[in-house]
Figure 1 (cartoon, rainbow, N blue to C red):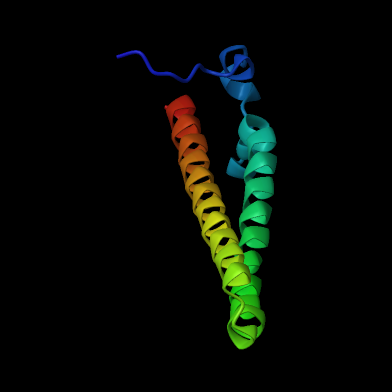
Figure 2: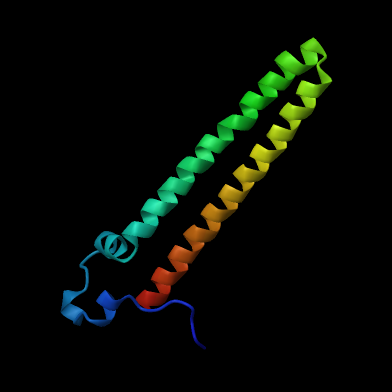
Length: 109
């Protein structure tokens, strides 16, 4: 079976004595750039989690109190858009984390 992941060039060129001595150094050498991307996606998820809460507050305080139907539709549409973006970011984060973990395990084997 051919795997979609290639062994990193630094692993194939290392003698067994030159391998990283602990799991942290191996993880940093193997996936440091990917971990930075995971951190950025996690920050994006955190920021996107705040928007629906603020939109809910504005829907109740502004649109419903003023009985402004046009504003209600606009805020509700924005609410749905932000929820979809948040869920897409969460899905991307989980998928990318799993891909990193599986590829590192495959390289270790």
